[in-house]
Image 1 (cartoon, helix red, strand yellow):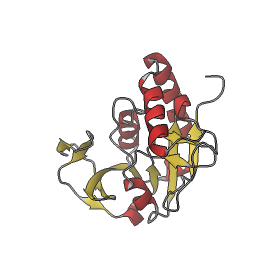
Image 2 (cartoon, helix red, strand yellow; image 1 turned 90 degrees about the vertical axis):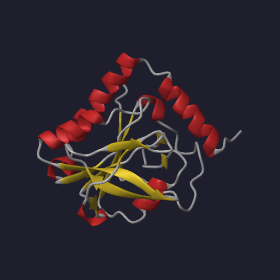
Image 3 (cartoon, rainbow, N blue to C red; image 1 turned 30 degrees about the vertical axis):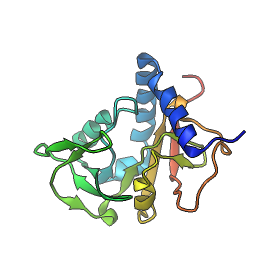
Length: 185
């Protein structure tokens, strides 16, 4: 029996929501350690990431670490159907909650895709080969189709999927690298 992307999305989100907080924090720390030693991370001057929701991998430590290392951070703001722009995050950035329940910058400087060195791409589920099941809005697929620098996703154990778990669509964009929690953790 095959499941629709919508059904799979709901199942993976449910698995994430049920994750034990201590286990989640331990896995997040492991994934951050892997990320921080990647050449793509260490050499990046501008990094794109999201402002995570409570059930997702917490991106706040990534943002703080990047800024502490002198990197600039940009976060998405939805501009239309399947369209988003990436906005420079500063101490003065003001936020509002989007229709999707995500915090977005109200104003600040938009940064063009060609200025961004590394994009940390969110998702609901990932395969080792870089297949990504997103949240269903198509914002990242549209953006990734135009983005030609490095991409990485961080997958907590409940987000790990088999290669054949869903069928890719022509508009689906893969992630360059998926960091996964080691089997011993």
